[in-house]
Length: 260
Ligand code: ADP
Ligand code: MG
Image 1: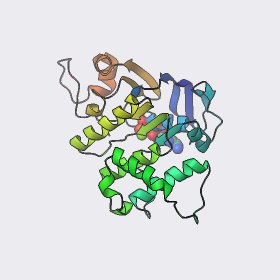
Image 2: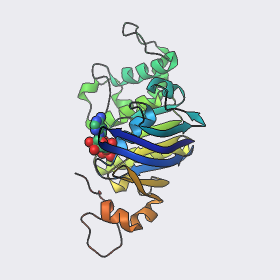
Image 3: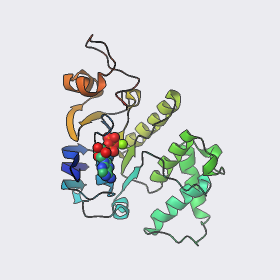
Image 4: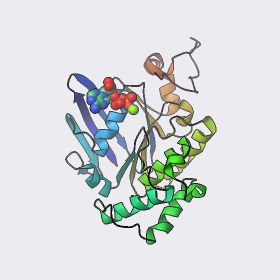
């Protein structure tokens, strides 16, 4: 189980995350939502190890993560994707996933001069099938459509066989149908026992997908609960979900919440 306890991250005078506590259990799919600038990506960077904490604790299965480098956290099963997909553009789709598999097996950075071994091909292909990229295996990443790039980033994260998967806007920029299919895949991963925490702006990628929703506003958790619960929360509606709605008081803006 992931336990985030009193997480604080300040950048100088900017209180990006200001005392946030929550848990994510194995098998749970949890959405972290909130307006732009709420601190969602900063939370992810603190959990995955890109940023040192200003305060608080992060425990994964009882083990403190705060002082571990990202690669060490990955060895403990903590993998993340980024809001802007991070992939190797000079390699093919298959090679990207092979490289990720071999890097996680080697448990250290692999040499740029080592050739990719044949053994990882099968495992990489299995991940491409799982993420719907089989047909794109030999494509150059440079030529990939945006949605396929987001899937590839997920395949790369899965290559480390993570137990905790942190997905920062996994479906951002995707059309509705593509977003729905990607989110079903994300839900399936949690169903297989992974702890999944993801951020998202489109409420159709939260409703029916997340078991639980955390609402982050200005670095603090404003509410948490089921999607129905948080969408009835008066403060959440006023500060985030209610944007652009009439004052009839029911139903949320399902297409997309406040998005600058
Ligand atoms: P979100 O992902 O919810 O949109 P972020 O976590 O990216 O929000 O940002 C939260 C706040 O922290 C914003 O005010 C942002 O400008 C600030 N911030 C994020 N990263 C940095 C950084 N590396 N240096 C300074 N300020 C940052
Ligand atoms: Mg963000």
